[in-house]
Image (cartoon, rainbow, N blue to C red; front, top):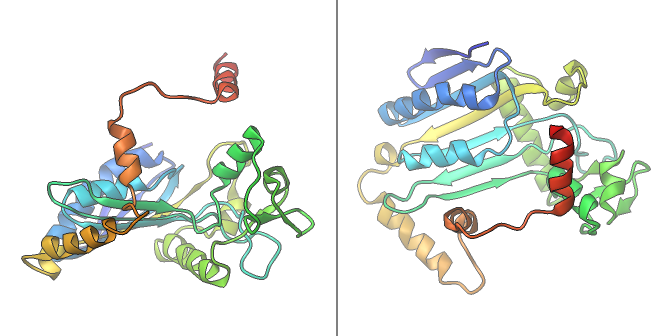
Amino acid sequence: ARPDVKKISPSVIKVLGNNCLAPMVLNKGLPELIKAAKENGVAVLAITNSHHMAALWPETEAIAEAGLVGLACTSYKPSVAPAGATKPLFGTNPISFAWPRPGKMPVVYDMATASMAMGEVQVAKREGHKVPLGTGLTKEGKETTDPAEIADGGVLLPFGGHKGSAIAMMVELLAGALVGDNFSFETKEHDNNDGGPPKGGEFILAISPDKITGAGWNKHADKFFNKMSEMKGVRLPGERRHKNRQDLSPRKINEDLVKKIKELSQ
């Protein structure tokens, strides 16, 4: 399979994933998005029928490194209950945002709209850690700090109650209805449940500060970032990840995880 790139208008790019994995789709779509945003000021990339979006920061960071503001979001199979509910409807519905800083690493965040990403809950379960109250509910709809009760038949909660729930709903609409792909509940209905990643869509927006603001936007933004960094206990989003990426010293990896990987590779 190969993804098909369609230019719907000067500022709207659509990539039909044709069941391809997300890196293949992004490899085709991001250059077209960046080009369109630089020419028109704002551009949208709508991705459909692709697999395993995974972390979103690589695409927004790539957009920012091209001198543009990037925003991306995607949905998944239901694992998060809307505020007030005890059954899942939303995916963890992550959002990533990146701001360009010419000559410096961009400011990038990538966050689930759930109180915690399901992967983090599963790590806590594997390592025997508790999770904060408000992370999720048991299958009976009761609050719990036991990650196993959430991961095994339970449900995650949105961050920030009804506020996070509204943002998760927005992601469903942007990465589902707007791009022309499934909502999370439809993804579950259409998935063959073979354990692999289900297919879905992604919404990506790129904005040119050169076109919209003109000269001086970077200095103005840096003034804000400097003010923020001067505050005690504050670091810019993505700063730790960038530092870790440059650290070439040995890494500590969970022994049980290494054993599991070896077992799967046999």
